[in-house]
Length: 120
Image 1 (tube, rainbow, N blue to C red):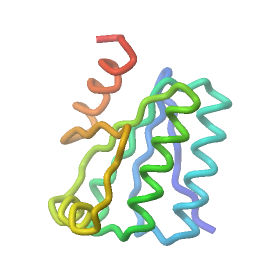
Image 2 (image 1 turned 30 degrees about the vertical axis):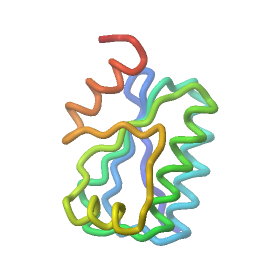
Image 3 (image 1 turned 90 degrees about the horizontal axis):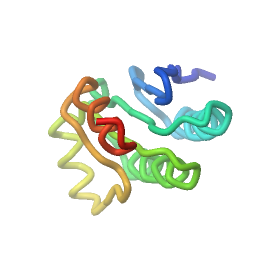
């Protein structure tokens, strides 16, 4: 089964989703990411979805769940690179992403994480 790489950048974790995610990959990412947050005491998670052209309700809920798990482990979550079609889909599905900040790109997302954890 394919795994999405999780890179550590100081006290932040960077996840760049470069494949079409199915439910199994999403669940594996959720599990892998929660373990990495715990193991590294990460203070922030940046998830770049710029390669995703569309999402379904399961993937949207998975992103919200990751943010919730991160908060419980004292880490903040920033989502970057959301395509307009993805944003429209999330709104049409009525999905909210509580606890998830957004940024246009990875550079701005890292700046947002620094602000959220008090490093700005």
